[in-house]
Length: 253
Ligand SMILES: Nc1nc2c(c(=O)[nH]1)N[C@H]1C(S)=C(S)[C@@H](COP(=O)(O)O)O[C@H]1N2
Ligand SMILES: [Mo]
Image (cartoon, rainbow, N blue to C red; front, side):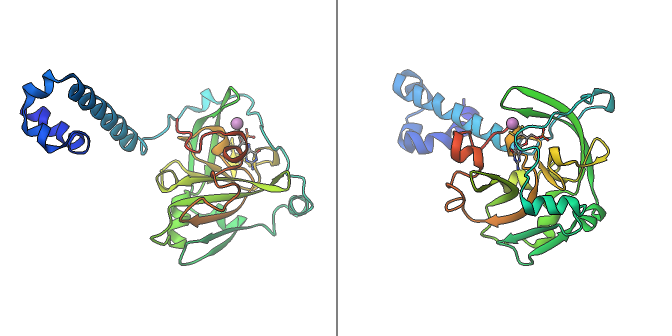
């Protein structure tokens, strides 16, 4: 019982206080209210711990034979703005990925530079909330490497992705916290299924954040900003769908 008490005391300290703890196991066990609080706290603690430790676990990866014959496109399949259309016509020669916000060294990275960075290739399953999935191979540098090069400042808490496509005049955007930003499978993909990323899937660069649902995987990424808070960006909920359709900001899978 003593080991149970010490494990539980972590949560009990906050919920029923040290006095109840000192009263001893039997008394706590006999008191239905205290029992309820005790086990509620334990469940909460376990859930929290599981969530925290598992956030760094890898998403499943698949073999080439398991790749979907067709990887469908969803949401915007071409931003279609004058600016984007001009970039496509120019084979993205003028494209620069801007990395800024709360960083010591803001970056402006060309596509050739991005493709020269050490990259990671991964065959993963994309899960869209609309009820479809597809397995594809993605390749690109780790987002974490780029952020390390830029030098995140201590006050940075979230990474915001601003996309080229517009919804009612506002750019599609998404955000992740630093756990997902530095997750080993979080990459800025410039290739899908061993081909240079096409327009339908987010050319020239799209986010892959493999422990999250589809809408977090921002396509057509133009700018990446480190911020301390999501307030004041869009409608403040961290993403286009979060702002407008009440999708959860945390869409962990
Ligand atoms: N910029 C941008 N990113 C986006 C979207 C979008 O409409 N615009 N749709 C999201 C949704 S809901 C999904 S399921 C995936 C679809 O990616 P795909 O077109 O490569 O299948 O992109 C996500 N990222
Ligand atoms: Mo989606």
